[in-house]
Image (cartoon, rainbow, N blue to C red; front, side):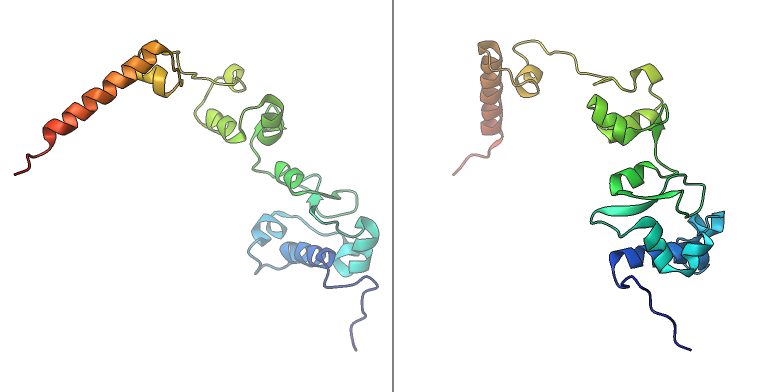
Length: 183
């Protein structure tokens, strides 16, 4: 007996989302099974049996959106799923680093510190009150007439320019002394 065709078109990105959702939760040979079906994540019976029921509940997938389980410890069902952006999906993962229950990517946008910087500060045990400061170990201001002031800080006052010119002159003299004589 031939299988009934779906009312909604298969071969679309929505269809592949539905198919992959079912596979992750039911196929023990799937590489992702351990993170889904292997830890008790299920698909509601209506969605498991019918692609059309999935489309009726969720609608068609829009470009740039992905299927999200709102509670990562519950299964796929109409009350626990939504179409969200990939960024929102990544912020809802079990391994998302959070500071006071806020994902670091969202916090980094609010405070202007890179998310990687916040993760490193957590890893290195920076005190909680200093985690969100713009710079934890900000470099001290260098004195005028020093290499650090000229190169790092970009100062072009006369003292810094003179220092750099003298340094360049010393370098040229040393280079000239190390060259073998031409015969």
